Length: 313
Ligand code: SF4
Image (cartoon, rainbow, N blue to C red; front, side, top):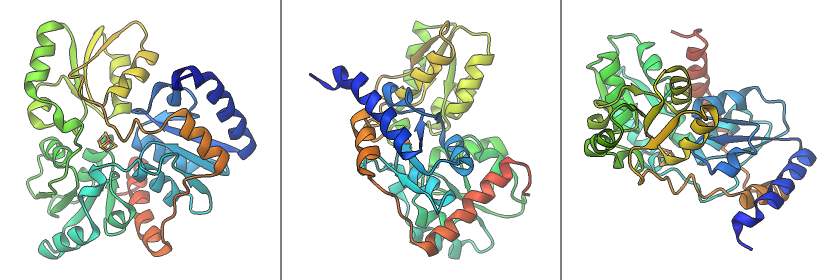
């Protein structure tokens, strides 16, 4: 029997372990469909952080990648947070280190450091305010215009934010998402030839040549809202392929086509129901963050959440 045949049995075991542990399962939109189906909450990085901040559950299991589980831990220092796959390390988050940020700060005194949540906790600890793809424009707009902004680590999200805010004084780090960076303008144009009436909806981690061809640029939660509210019946989707599942679930009468079939994040696909069952059963892999790093990193995330609630400038 293969993994697919085992899914019903594994799902039942997950449900049983979850009840026993009083756990909440938070799942990113790029996870495998069968993992999404067992999530108490399925969403984007911002949604996962918000859910983590308000949960009463004793145990948080984060089906996603390392920085998401770390963020949940930072917001719940007294709770146990598990990442079912300890190899699920986001490559973009590895593209910047705390020393890089410290050097940039020394080169640009007075600059405000904005880091995408796709960063390790020790980078968040030297960051002024975090952002996600859903709120990056709002976060940068909240910073006084005369202050330079150091934006890390995604150069594509940084370029998109710069375009949207019209802000010239941005110093943008050279990282990227290896999955979203695969998209090319020719992929969109080829797909448009096949589906001329489709709307193009892409993630802001995409290169600018792709963003320029899009009808809408959205985070994954924004895509769900946009495609649900827009009259179009066919959409060309420019993000990780896992996103097709929640889109189809939300809008069963609409058609969603991935811009290029290459948009698979191997890290996001590591978590299976087997790893989720093992995580709950064996209490692994527990996320820990040293206290000094955690208290500094927490501030940068809380500041982001406050901006989202409209309480910070
Ligand atoms: S899709 Fe990109 S940013 Fe997201 S986890 Fe994968 S590599 Fe990291």
